[in-house]
Image 1 (cartoon, one colour):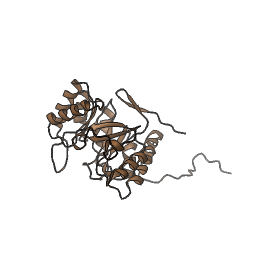
Image 2 (image 1 turned 135 degrees about the vertical axis):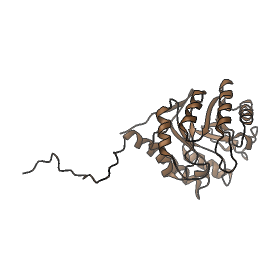
Image 3 (image 1 turned 180 degrees about the vertical axis):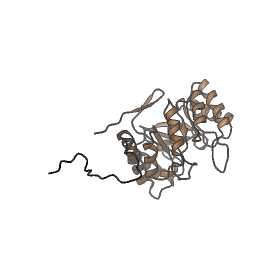
Length: 259
């Protein structure tokens, strides 16, 4: 039987390769059930959009399962200065020194501003943060982020919330070839097959929010994503057959004894 091992970012070790978010759910009950069904061990929370001091049952923070690691993110920040400020705010509020770093460059496409992202990464690394930057599927930028001290690189599969799946698999392959830190596909996953495709490329993990929260049945989709990530990882480890232009008989004649 093919088995998988745990994976690591900085000083933390994880088993699940699915990372989930907390936004866009119809209500807190659905969010809580979906988080549990996902089997994820890491959940992201937008620092700008939650009350960091409220952990009651009527708050997002109060509904996150106790076993899950809270990963604050800087969603909604458009400058390095803002992103750094909100990362500091989360740490001061009692979160860890981990941050999913987002610096958006365009309100319509939500593509990252990579110049500002690099600036924020360097500053936060200097301040002792474990930085996981969300970026384009650009091998050059991903390499620069790693050289700046990022603990992982998080290239998008497609624009945030688009559900388009992995648009540039070859770019992801190149990023994987040159990376010595975990590569986590972040954004664009719309359904279970998208998550499987990402994992089959060999990425370390997949992060998603809208693909689960926006489904007709978020709880069921969360469970589907859990199995999809596992299936994709096992397929990657098992090694797929090569693609060919012509058929190959499943019962070949070569080497068969004839009377």
